[in-house]
Image 1 (spheres, rainbow, N blue to C red):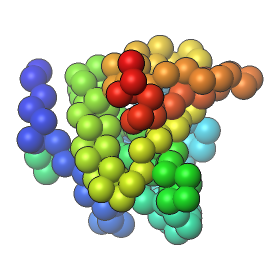
Image 2 (spheres, rainbow, N blue to C red):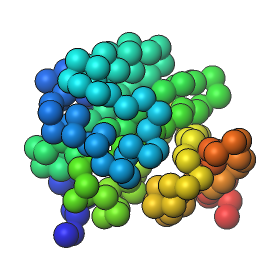
Image 3 (cartoon, rainbow, N blue to C red):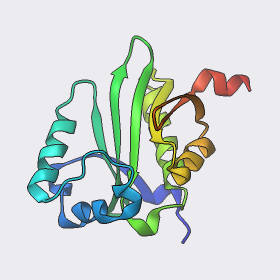
Image 4 (cartoon, rainbow, N blue to C red):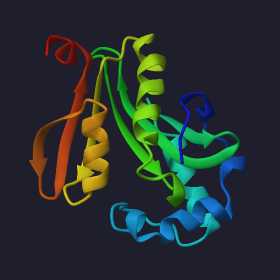
Length: 163
């Protein structure tokens, strides 16, 4: 399957994007093994989404291929003083994993947030999630540390331009 950049969109997540299909993502072993809070039913998922959406300095985006909701992008800890943010990407639709979606999503995110003067993006990823680590490295993230089982990675626009 070829993924065309113009067919991937980030949209501010809406409650109507919560569905049984979205809930089904958490049954996948590839998601289940790497997510801390697994919703058990639709109401649990709605509660989790509400908590994420209500966090200060945070934006939850739905990742869409055409009109199909295929994942989420959580941008949190947005810090305009330090020009940084922390991100988390979940590609929930199994058929869209390992297709370069994360790289496309990060490219869109950089364009949106560079206009807001956010140049540093941080994330944490389970050190056993090799597919995600590979995807983040392809997007320019570097490993900057490890704590317990989590790799800390960072994309720094200015450092990436020096190399």
